[in-house]
Length: 330
Length: 253
Image 1 (cartoon, rainbow over the protein chains, first blue to last red):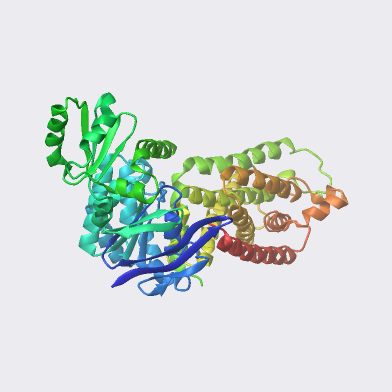
Image 2 (image 1 turned 45 degrees about the vertical axis):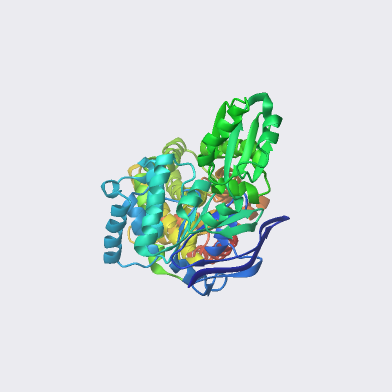
């Protein structure tokens, strides 16, 4: 059973094509990830699905209702956690939840039980009557997720839910999302540019670049595309000698070099490391360092967005820079 | 489509925030307070041309100051919309199953309540400065005029806020509009003293009718018949709410 269907969605802002012919469907009870760099069009897709934007062309529906004509129905069915914080910081946690419930037409007794239930899950019961402005970043984020759940939505949209949070808080929020998905059988759509987030949480992931979907599958299937582990060896000036030595041995799938390193792609690399090192030592070549990378979505992402593994170092550091800059702004 | 519960929620939210932000209340009331004290006392003995016979300046000034208080606090309701946009809360309302018209009405009622309360505080205070109500029975009807003035200018604030993205631009535009409206309204001096071509602008602004109406009800003297003031205000209020609802609907998040 499909909770969300999109067919050939298009959205243009001036000359910029933000969303280009996007089609996918999300099954009921699934955690579906939209993964892509900043500015790839993830938030625009979400804004269309949550009825804040109407697509220029194409079609999308939630539980069979069109996003452009049945807005009121859809607004009742969905919960949204926005990328930017959207709590009223001059109200208490309880008031934020209560006002939300009233907006969605919940009765007084429903609201009361639901609020205590949610505060319990979020572990915020003891702070219920404190002003939100005194909350930490992680607490605010948790409260926002809780507010999105107040009216028991069928589909939950999370736009970059852990952006700018520390690793520990992020981990906790992942656990909450998992728990909510299993406990309330909510369909979850999550956008992220943290690869490990998509890997940890999502049943299926769509990789988005420049407004269109470049790959869509389970994280495991996506990782299989890379085909093998990556082993990086540092062995000084004998690089080309080593290259010819290793050619055709150890079932190596691919070999590359950069300035001082040898990059090998091969299956079950961890078992072959001792053999490779002793083989090289027999040939009087010393190995200074060895590092092993199991394929992660990171590699998949670089593979699909057209950047080769060789450029990984540079592009990842600029990616980190962008993240840092975002965090600084908050 | 008008939904009552969301309107109530928006009103309640405005009330809670208003009473929690003590600095905002004080900030909003300081200016009319000082103007009332210093202009009221300073011009106590002045012969002001155009003032009808036995009227003291304070009797003339107080309705103007009440109108001014409401003008400023209402216009700057637009700032709270911009704050909500900046801090993301507006989105939360926009994805709720609530019609855009209800959001606009909720805003107007919330902002109107706080504005009229401030106007009443200034009026009460003026009684201690020696202001005498013309008729204790008809004075409460002044609240109707206060409500109408505040509807007009909250809508104006909403319209500006729909097209403005940041608070600074908004404050600048509002100052460009609000100060001339205030000075032209006859809150400080009789507009009959203004040259003919300036007076035309006075009669183009709804506050002029609002202040005139308030003066009629509170001090017992108005330039125009009260019924004229009333109908002009109702008309402008209705038109500006419609434009505000339209502009808000069109505005992007």
